[in-house]
Image (cartoon, rainbow, N blue to C red; front, side, top):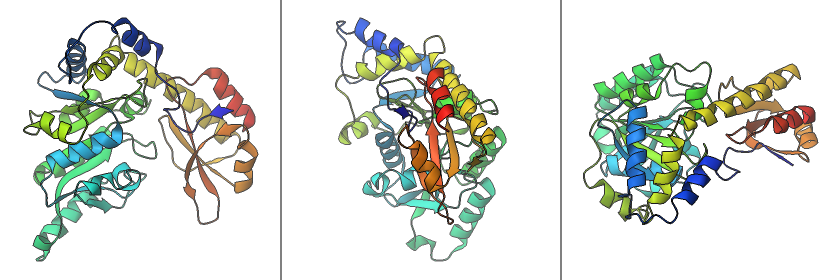
Length: 341
């Protein structure tokens, strides 16, 4: 059976596992105050070209999204996102559970449009009844989007400007950020992300780590008592070294980008094969997620041989099928998938 259903079906890259084994018997202080975590934070700050970056390590994406949003927003504020945004569709109400509403706007290929965002905010504050409504307190996007599409530097700059105009922090979900940075058509660097975002995170879970997301507050704006807040949410690891060692390995000799680039290269082979075999692409994704439109019969034919992701059903009953590559996808696996297709 071939596995292309997600980018976290395998464990961790050998360099990460090796680092965990090599440091296993070295005593280290707890709660992320260890030397391994300090080294990882320094390497991440350097990669972001942000000397004063405030970096902290959390375990997973849902946890990270919920804690960052809850920590930054006031009790009566909500977070703006595209209607296809991960926090709106795939967090099982985790954001709302913290007491914050997700305020959705229509997407464009998975993206939030700056003009639409501005129009929404203008209309909101022009409404004489707005004091009875959830106040927009943050803007959330992901890079790449749920459809594997990318914000260009121009689009990111435009969104950031709207946020500045309305004094709203811009939060970028980077669970798959490495795959965005490695895409051939991408024109956004990690330094650009750090410049335009007020807070973002670098995902490790989906890119070579056993688990872990690196949260970066970019403007000396880490919430007061952040560590206490993380602990209150049950998210402060006693053995913080588990995350520190992993990110230290991922940000040594550009491993993070090397793994991301490999996954994107594998995905582009799949994309070319899908097109050559006559499948319609649901979106034009330049990253490790590829979306093909299939009839139920076509999906049934490949299902005994390959596990894929589900992207929804169209009005004509055709199915959106998601193929996802990862840091561990091999050429042999891609060749076998092409043969099945």
